[in-house]
Image (cartoon, rainbow, N blue to C red; front, side, top):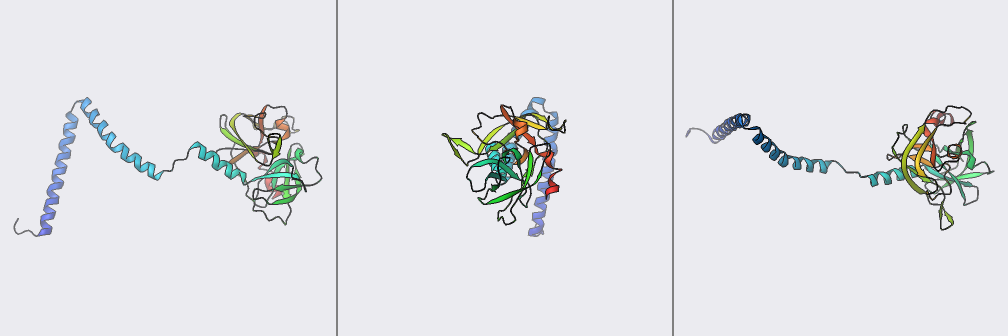
Length: 270
């Protein structure tokens, strides 16, 4: 041993330590195999209590926690960018809502809100506004497609389309002109509920039984004077439907036309 260098002594010490650890491990496993079942369970529980908190702290540090409230506020912020308010040219009275569906500003809306107007304009989320022109309308339905004036300077943010909704799914909607103390305001009103029924196949082409999505949201308690054109969306900020006159008529709860029914028509107007 006296003839060994410092590095050789270190290597010998490491070798002895390794062999000792290996022998200890084998001996420990042998004892565990021979120990009573109750003793083994107790030892395992102690090890889990020591290791689990360490793993949990690592996961907490690397995985952000998103609660339900954050999901709702994020979804509202996302959809609000695509919501437009429709009004008569030169008027401050909002007659309905619309949704931007393309980067060039194409809007879908309920055509009954525009039936009594000779001219109308859209107020976008950024505060800018533009005179709108009808470019396509459903023959047997409520949906109208509008295009902005080419001189519009708005930054258009189209909606994200959701898949077909599921029964019991949590949903949100933004209503139009709100009523506060008997006076109308331009604020949007948020309501929350669940999907209570879906009829996604338009059985009668004449519109007598249109596709629809029923919700648990009460119309009378929504605090909204203008609901036509309101979006229905999920907690990911994806739009599921739009409120129209036909599907909403005579209902105490908010009903919406499925946005998936319009996907085939949208490319025709882009």
